[in-house]
Image (cartoon, rainbow, N blue to C red; front, side, top):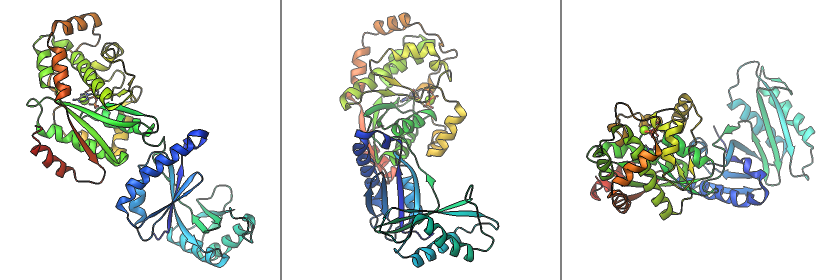
Length: 408
Ligand code: ATP
Ligand code: MG
């Protein structure tokens, strides 16, 4: 359809008085970054809202991108009319006709005179615009209580804005307005959803992934890079820390404590992630754990594993059902990647009966008996490679670079 502007509405944070300016600025920065792909577009700020003047750019494409911006609750494509009843009426008619409404559809006009100098009141405008629309759309009826379409008109000093669609957007808090966290990103379904949920609460997220080459393949690592790339579409860019985990893992397998190996590995992951978080100024760790889903996610396991870090350990999915997590993963575009069958370092070493009720004392004893463990953890931190994935750039290109840098 032929629109002139997009109207972006800010979300719940507008309620928080003193933070509002900071939050609106964060949204603006995010929008600006994403609009680099639309060079003709111009941003206009207004109290509690943003307008994007399309200047010929595709509104449809832009909506797809802007729907990912946290802190924006909804988007309306707007047709612009001159401050003149005739022009407003003809644009209103065009807008309604473009909707291709079924016979017998109902509508109402909801006019707001924001600019008080305009010679007609809101009430008068409802009639002045409603009548020509009714005349030119046969079958259309008025229903002021529950219309199928609410045609909104806002008369502002700079023009008359007409719109009827309200497209839901990501909502939540603007990116990075609630601090930074380090997220443990596996190749699975859950952790990318945990990342999205964290970003939506205003966290800036850096990701850390543990790989065990040669037990895990290059493709497994590429898959995680691809997932981080999808996440970068929501964040503008994502930093991904790739940690070589083979040595730590081998040390644990040599203890022959099969049933506790997942517990031990998870604790080591948290220790390494904590070190990276400290280095990067992140104040929390995030995982994709969901209560009861697997052996390492029983309450007892969470207790023993969680004690390996002093940082707050956030588990955004902890009370969610798997089906809901899957639906979310589909919505945010990570599901298809997540179900690719490449092995993860933990799935490879899953014992026949992993402990669902590990004993903290025993686990600590095993760790203490592994004298080289602190050194191995330090080495893993030291050998960590960091890449930055940017929204809108080709992942394959980055992978080529990865191979050159001898990551694998
Ligand atoms: P996911 O779908 O996120 O992999 P899961 O249900 O498969 O979760 P686990 O494999 O037990 O559960 O992992 C629990 C959490 O531990 C993950 O959500 C992730 O945060 C973290 N994790 C597991 N493996 C890795 C890894 N190789 N690198 C980084 N984080 C990991
Ligand atoms: Mg997993």
